[in-house]
Length: 321
Ligand SMILES: Nc1nc2c(c(=O)[nH]1)N[C@H]1C(S)=C(S)[C@@H](COP(=O)(O)O)O[C@H]1N2
Ligand SMILES: [Mo]
Image (cartoon, rainbow, N blue to C red):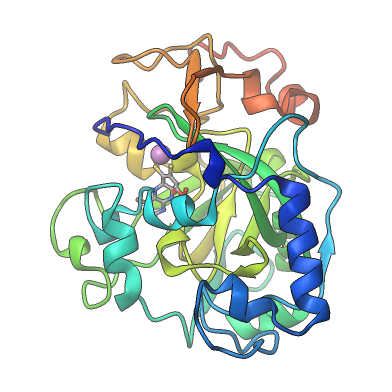
């Protein structure tokens, strides 16, 4: 993964979380939520499950138990939709924001296969009807050294896995992204080995922090951020959080993921955020939050040690990076 410069965004552009929540509550009261939040778009608030991506406020979001970390501010929506990685749409941080509009997210089917009692598939609409959505403010840290704080909207991955009824042989779960050359121009080029694949050990996948996200900032997921459904694993480097997922496969053997295949010495299976284990080409001890000037120290497990450290007890994290 090449390394790029993090753009500097004036701190005056960052909305403090309380202001953001107040503004949203206010806009909702006056019935203008989606208008104002869609940055000028004149769409009326869309019914749940009928939304277009990146537009329309999501109704009925429960405020989750994960609030904004103390002393931290939300990353501006504008930065999160114009800066990021989604290699199916191009090699630069600005590519997804420019190119992802060709992604078609309806109809969208997710299949569940492998070590499950009954392989099945369901549409995104079924998913949106089946799981209550909650908001969780999570840090995200990219392996390249930039980070962000984002209010995601989604539901626990564990809930979907429970309903899939994995067999006793299911030790890992793979997440496979869409790779359609007609919609994703860079899947015609061997930038990576398509489709994009990620995986978790079952106990990691069942951890309550692991989220399947369908929106952010109170709105449906923008295409460039992985619409209509993506992973969010806040204790791991950003590349583990696969976007635009079309398949979950339960398997017995440890799977090879896209980035392990691309650079086995640089990207491990676990990819836990760890300031003590440097990437072979750069340190992981500090990070620059999008919109901030000074670097801050990177926290073990990105600050989520309390929730996840027990998963890795007894493992040598310098070897299992
Ligand atoms: N399918 C797919 N998922 C992906 C990627 C990608 O290139 N393709 N990039 C990953 C990386 S490296 C990061 S840092 C995050 C960025 O997500 P964001 O743009 O929403 O911050 O998405 C991850 N998920
Ligand atoms: Mo990343």
